[in-house]
Image (cartoon, rainbow, N blue to C red; front, side):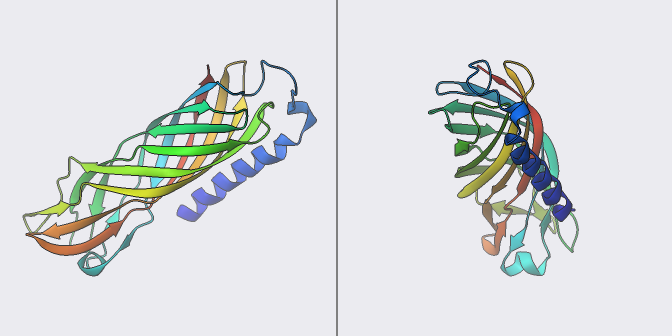
Length: 214
């Protein structure tokens, strides 16, 4: 399933890169087309979060896993230069945690992410971009338990984030978007003060949505 999502996302972004070279979509020199320094881009996406789980110690022995989730995501990009923007991504999701002894409960994840982006073909209708940055992840509203006892988790973590995507302008101010991110996040778990190990979630995030240019 994860390999299929990666293949679809790579194909969509590759298609965007290929279209960039097409004269039919160039629209060079037209101020109504493309993006420019000072523009604000607001996107609303539906994203699927696919955890790439790694564990240590007791969590590995229990074969702990984290399920996928599909949620809305809102992001804001401010274009510092014609080709360079800063994006803030906001979303939250709830995930069930599984193990070979049964369901361990659910936990909410809030990972605001800040990315520095480079946009290719900024004056065109088809605009691929890449980004890199950092995320702060906050774990909350957890109800994790094992054997009737609560599992405690470390509340926050910092980690890197990478991004690739493409915007396709539909009207003067509206565009379609496909976006793929890799985010690194983790938490430490304990039971009655005894460490259970570290849970690396490190999700691949695939999103499709629409945006507006202001």
